Length: 242
Ligand SMILES: [Zn+2]
Image 1: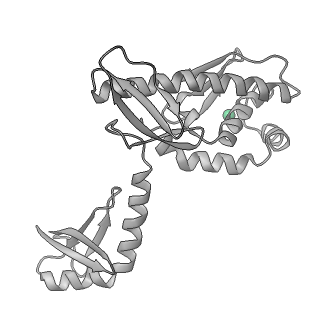
Image 2 (image 1 turned 90 degrees about the horizontal axis):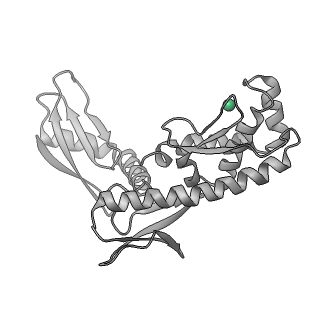
């Protein structure tokens, strides 16, 4: 394996080159999710020929590297260190870890920061504190919003029971007994997206399936829901990451 560098304007992008026996005429350029680049070349291609081939596609490479970096930057915390981003109601907050000697206070939002006190200073401890904060704040917001939304919908006679559940691929569900179950991760999403999920589940109190009547109920009571649903679908990876 050799390492070459692509230069384009101010950008210098190093990439590893490996040989791929199956390739015969062209190099293949890969941009990984973190923005790193690798290249597969047919056997026998000189470094010079590989570098030229990559250079010819420089604009394409730079564009994809920049897009990947941008997406990567917005990922949820992985290490739970100060400076990482935390999402709440569609807004970005910066995680601020504060080591303390005594018993830590619960995490709290201060301006644009989520301040998390920790005695043990391990990422597991900080992660648990961030998740506890999401649960408390999230339940509070969702319960309040469920009540407000329920009162605006003529077919909902009383505010249903609410349960928060961590789910990988589902934002909400409506149990046969009429309980509304909402994904804990949903509180990271923008407010209109949260309302869409609540109205969607509340609409199931009237229509249990996803038939035409169900969707027309949404059209009448959740203005712009298609846009909110599309935004949620786009964010699913980011919102459910941790
Ligand atoms: Zn549904």
